[in-house]
Length: 382
Ligand code: GLY
Image 1 (tube, helix red, strand yellow):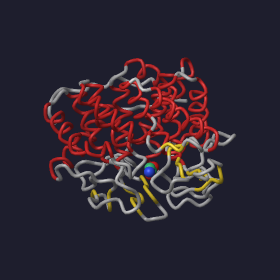
Image 2 (cartoon, helix red, strand yellow; image 1 turned 60 degrees about the vertical axis):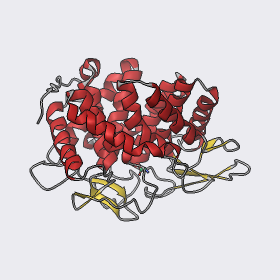
Image 3 (cartoon, helix red, strand yellow; image 1 turned 120 degrees about the vertical axis):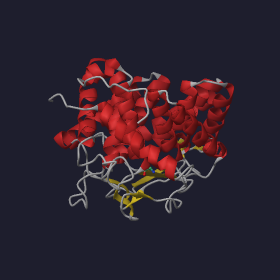
Image 4 (cartoon, rainbow, N blue to C red; image 1 turned 180 degrees about the horizontal axis):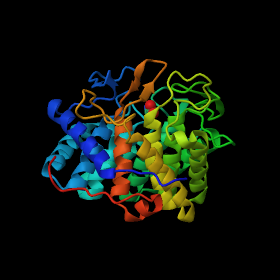
């Protein structure tokens, strides 16, 4: 693999410019996807709103990297605005809401208050556990779980650490083991949705919402899984989860190759669009996390992640702040079947792109593994 060229600071500057405009022009609004490049501010018509943590998380990243008061104040305001969701039992996306927001706040400035919010959020997520099927249920039905839920076990691990409650840890581990058994196939591809009999706990069948078919591999689902199993290894030090994350990473790399950015579903013989950039952004950040956990094998993951970021930072994907596109990454798709956010910017694509850049900007070791030049985060206003 050639050394990718990646200008971390330029990409971060673009990200900051786009987010500064969003929070200045539309204060305390939490959009999910763009329509013709403009942020769409209505509620999500498909799922309970699940994306508010991502904009908030970008604000914390910019606060950390620049040291500017502007970003810190915004990050606090947006975090406080979503705090009430800590007891929201209508969604399985509690980790998406709280890890990038209050989790980052706690990592930067730990306090009893941030810890309390995160423990409440973790308990709300853990309350979705079905002890017979040993899975965390989705908002769809008591019998449904998604591969995406693997991104929401991190908040339970965090709550277990902060509270010392072993029951929380057990729930997160059990869900990960169930997902590993039923949602990761023998060839290290992923099922989007697993259906169970919620009374007996028996596994029934695979299904999908955003992928091509029940037996196909939705690329963002696999990216969520490679990231989530890495997080689960971090929370448990159980090498089974590390091996699963590595197998999934190998699948991403094998199936995507030099394109770096996959289609929405690798098994769709006639994809409507060639690229789903948010899957690539999630994979890049997940691969960088995995690189830190993988010893010598980490170099391959870090270099591939840099290749993804270099591709996403090119003209084809990175928005031009001087033009009228309001998101950061173009060519993402939320839900093709429902016509939501198709070939647009999506908030989690923008967040995980920013997060992956933050991982490189803040770790000389990762930059060395990835063979990319240092970032120079300037502590000055744009
Ligand atoms: N619900 C998470 C996703 O669309 O990937």
